[in-house]
Image 1 (cartoon, rainbow, N blue to C red):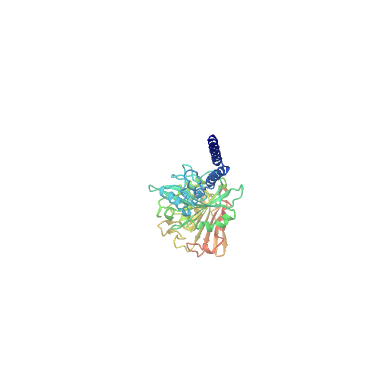
Image 2: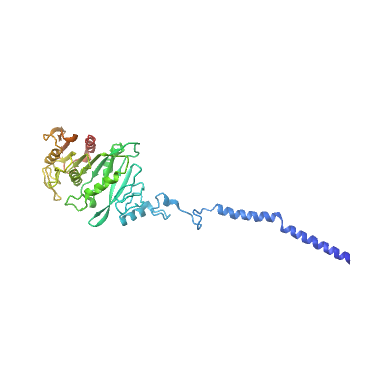
Length: 379
C-alpha cells in the first residue's frame, strides 16, 4: 500500500513539471515577439503627416497651388484671386492673397505686400513679369488698380535699370505693352511699367473715369523706390491717345520723368506748361490725318480742345528755354522738328507723320518705339 502511494505521488510530480515547461516554451515567446513587431511595423509604414488624427497631410497649400491653404489644391489659384477682389486687398497673379487693404501691393512671385502707404516689399530686386495692385479711393469706393511691371529675366547682377512707364488709350488695356516694349526689356534696356486706367481710361475731365490718376502714378513711383535694381534718375513715360494726354499732364504737373513721349495727342488748350512746370525733354508724334485728335487743333471726339500739334511742341520748347527756331530733318515723307540748345541739355522733338491717322501706322513701323527709346537714352 505504501509503495502504491509513493508511485502515485511521483507520477503527479512529473505531470506538474511537464506542465510548467509548456508554459515557458521559447516558441511561445517568439510568437508573442513577432506579433509585437507586426504591430510596430504597421505604425512605422503609416503615411500620417501630422500624427494627430491619422489623416494624411496635403502639402499642396505650401507652394501656391492651393490658394487658401486648405489642402484641397484649388485650380489655378482662383481662390486667392477671389479673396483679393472681395475686400480690396492686394492680390498677385499666382492667386496668393496680399497682406494689405490700404494700398499695399504684391507681385506675381507671390510676395505679399506690406506697409501702410502703398509700398511694395523691400529686399529682392524686380525680375521677370510682376503684377501689382494698388488700392485707391474713387468716388468713395476703394478700387484695386492693376500695374504690370516687366523686368528683364534674368536680371544682371548689380545693374540698375531705367524705368519706362506706358499709358494705353481710352477704352484700352495695359497688356499689349508687354509685346510692344518687351523686346527691349528682354534686351536688358529698361524695366517697363504699365498701369491700367480705371474704367479703361485716364481722367482728363471728359472720360468715364473720375480717378485721380496723378495720385495713382505718385503711388506707383513711391512703391518702386523700394527695389534696389531701379535707377530712379532715369524715368520716362510713353502714352498713346488718351494716354498721351495723360503723360502731357504728368509732364506739366510733376517732376517724375526726365522725358515723355506723347503719341497721337498734343497739349490740351486748358493745360499747358507754366512757370511751375519743370523743364522736360519731349518726343511728340502726331499724324497729319488724325480724325480723333485734330492735327491742327480744336475740339476732339471726347470734347477736349487741343492745341495745334506744332504749337504744342513749341510750348514745350519755350518751357525748356530752347531755341524756338526748329531744326528740320526729313525722314521719307515725314518731318522731324528739333528744338535744341535747351536748358540743362533738354530737347524737344516733334515727329510729324505725313498722311497718318490716329493709329500713326505703328503696326507697320517696327522702329516706332525703338526711336523713342533712343531719344530717352539721351536724357
